[in-house]
Structures are given as C-alpha cells and as structure tokens.
Image (cartoon, rainbow, N blue to C red; front, side):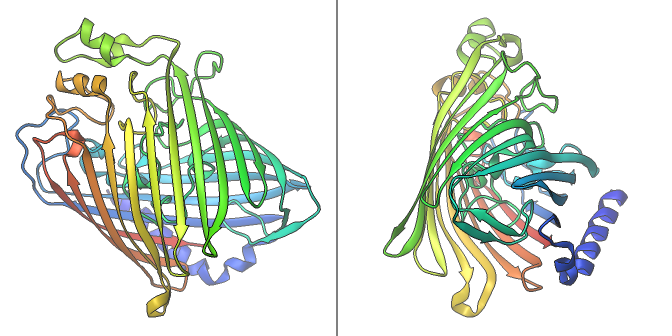
Length: 437
C-alpha cells in the first residue's frame, strides 16, 4: 500500500512539473507524452438474497486503481512510426471487478495486481502508404507525431496493441480516462475483443482510410486460458478476427459517424450446454474446453453531434453466447445510449459531462450455466434469478489546469448486478483524477 501511494504522488508531481513544458518534447521525429489516472470508488452496503464466489460484495467497500502510461513514438522512415508504451497499473476494482458484467471501473481492465507493476503495454510498427497527394495536418499527441498525413491511405500495423485503440471508437463514450468508466460504456459490451488480462494482444492490422469511409481488418492472438495473460502463439488453432466499416457523414451540418463491426474468435472454449449435461450441479466450464470452438458477433456504433457543445451516441451488440466468454466480459447482448458534451455553454470549454445507460444480457445457455452454480471469470452468484443488468452512469469532469489536469465525479446505479434480480440495486460513487502531459 505504501508503494501504491508513493507511485500515485510521484506521477502527479511529474505530470504537473512538465505540463507547461511538454511542447519541448514534441517534434516531427519524436513524440513523448504521459498520462496518469487514479479512480477511487465507494459502494455503500446493499441487500442480496445470496452471494457466490464471483459476486459483487454486499458490504460497504472502497477501492482505488491507478494507471501510468508513457507514450513514446519515433519516425523510422517516411510514414513509418514505432510506438512504445511502458505502463504501470495497480490497485483494485470493487470486489476485484467481479459480480457486475458492465463492471464499474474501466481502468481495472489494466490492473493485474493490487501493487503497481511495470509492463509493456504497446510495442508496434505502423507503415502508412499514401493513396493521394492531398495532406492533412495532425498535432503531436499520444502515439501520434506532428506533421502531415495523406487524406487517403492504406496502413499496416504489426505488434502488441489494444484493439480498442482502433475499433469501436466513439467521441462521447470510449475512454475510461476521459469519458464514462463503466465497461459497458467504454466499448460495445457484446464485443468479446481479443486481449490479455490487461487489454493488449499481438495483432496484424490493415486499414484503408479516406475522409468519408474507413475499413479495418485485424487478426490477433488470444490467451491460452480465458482472461489469461499468456498468449497462444499457434494462430492456426487459436486466433481472433475483427472487421469494421466506418462511415462519416453530416446531418444538418453536424458531424456524425456509423460503425459496423463483426468479430470471430477461434480457440478451445468450453460450451455452456455441454458442460451442464456433464455436470448438472456446480458445473465448471474449464472441464469442457475443446479446440475448434468459436464465438462470433456483430456490433453497431453511432454518434451524432447536435451542436458545438454536446451530442448523442448509441451502441448495440450481439454474440452467439454458446461458448464461454474468453476476453472481455460476460455480456452476450448489449445496448447503450447517452448524451455527453463540454462546458462551452457556461464558459468552461475544457470541462466535460455525460449521462448514459448500459443494458446487458446473456444467452439462454449462459443463464442456465450460472443458475446451476457455474462460474465465469467475472460472474457466479451460486444461483440466478435472471434479469437484464442495467447500469446508469452520470459524470462531470472539471478541468483544473487548462487541458492537463482533470477532476471528475461519477454516480452509477446498478440494477440486477450480474443479471440477478435477487441482488441489489447497488450504488457506486467515484472520483477520478487524470493528468496528461
């Protein structure tokens, strides 16, 4: 715990000291940025008829998480960039991030232990090929060099990345460091996207981009076990494919975008129906794992600015739900929508705010497995009185130092945590401190 608080204080002193001099670290050849995010969550006691190994604890609880990331980018040759992101993560989510499918703290996706640990988050090479002579400027930012890039291009990215950096982007609901923090709001909940325990995976990514349309296709490694840290190197037997089409448009002269995405994971998953036939009481999905099983799904993501101050978003997702969740969280059907914006109207342009609802569900086979006493890697109350899980979240983020330091406050209401009508509702209050350099 002493190491945890020492790390937290050191990082924020570092970011504060360099916030105003960060321009000296930017050039067309190199870019160095950093971020630190601390989230503290408090959950009052709530009622439940019973609890299991993977339940949200009914007792009063307070937990804190921290992440620290260095974003280093270097230009190797024309239109070729190398990114390297060492990262520190530590702390815990509420109840160790168990018991809620749309878990309450998106930063705990990066946390592997309570004490902060250093690891390599991203290491990748990106080569861009121009398809026209028109250029558009871009500023130096995290993993992005200052300079001009073509308006139409084809690119290849190879290395360890987070698929969430490239797919399912949404201007209002995507990054738990600056937007909403519930898992069902930071990404499409039904997208069981390829990742290790911390959210990263070796990937080969192809992109075809123009100002109106974008196409992406990725093939990625998957963990050797569900939600594991070690990746399976045998791509012929274990892999994940992700495809996305994005269309940008204007509605009444306001920007909008539509994302259509599909995914397919192939690995040695367990099957919910088969394990119940083998073990009708307290089944263990691990006992039924078999090579060649798949999980596939489809996702929709829409965003629309309504004026210069705020906009709305909508996501819907579905996966087949026959085999066990392997990467992200135990959601087979997802629906989320909300409104978010900035503080332009009251002369606080760097402030941000939002309100949203994430509705999550699971397949009939998945329901039966949990009702029989089975555990996934996130859920397992020992029984189940099924109902859709609903997480309402609202927040306001105060810019404390121009655009470098932000203090945010959150409220979340969780109805039917873990899809269980016999538990909850639960309330969660959160504070987030986020620094950028």
